[in-house]
Image (cartoon, rainbow, N blue to C red; front, side):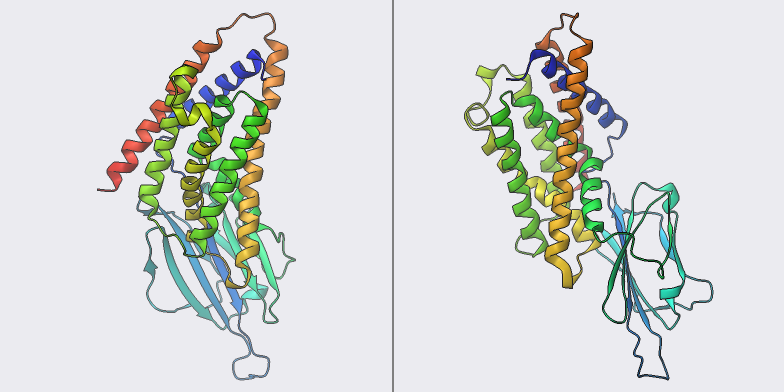
Length: 342
């Protein structure tokens, strides 16, 4: 059993996260949407008339019906020929170019990235099939493709950032930690949540399940309203589902959250030759981010316990603050995301 002081700390932490939610009430479940830049060297050494050829694919996220103000910048001497008009999906602007310029030896930068909160996953495929993955960040928006690959686990990093940057996912995990008092029950509940969103994430990527992100995001917000409502109730007044088998509740909502996670991967796409490995890395990244949240709260709880031994605090009072705070923010998200659908 958790000590009262540990539970108090978790409640305070949830309240802090709630205040953070108020500071960013326009954030969505997939608020951290990475962009995707793919450069493929299609050069044919036997073709002396055209020895150098590159194909470029750019997927630029669209958030709240507005594209992020970022764009790739290629070397000045390179003439980029657009391949067809840009296409727009519900979540991304897609552009394609081709060029005879040797992009593999030049500097590639992302204009506007330094003032954004997103990343760009750059995938460079050499003429011999070698794949190099880079992550361009606001602190480092440029890369020379001739340098060694900085990472082979770009989707892992994006998964971590996606979980930590999605405030509603964070609030849901915090709510589970607050809601479940027994360590074994908490482990079972979090595991059920993990398994569930892993299932729908995989089904979405393989196009077995396809739902629009708007309704999914609205229901995700509603899941936090439900969890906050349950947290605000006395144990004997909670629903039969959460009283008896809270892992079933977590599993059901995990299916919905998995569809939300899939939105980020749908936007940037997965390389056809590495769908399974990229999906696995992304999902592992989500789990690592989830463990970071839980671990952070437990560490802070231990520190809080040491600092508050002399105080006599009312556990139920702080739980009410956390529950109503989470509920108010999640209710706003639910209404806001529902109105956007019409």
